[in-house]
Length: 50
Image (cartoon, rainbow, N blue to C red; front, side):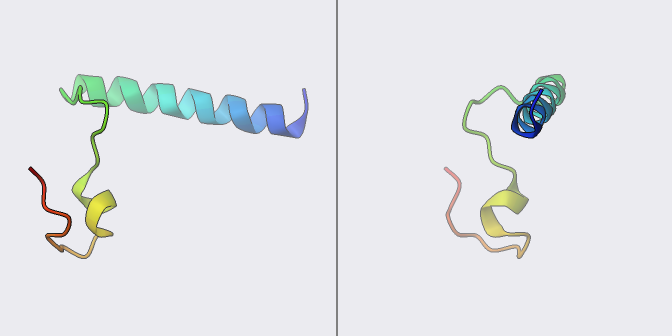
């Protein structure tokens, strides 16, 4: 196994675990973004959620 293969495997596992955790919280939308991800944690209202 090369270094890059290990990195990709690590990312896949983390993404799967994140998806499982989101499903348990009831978040099923494919394009969900946390408020902190949208506004950079600054509390801004841009872009507006619809």
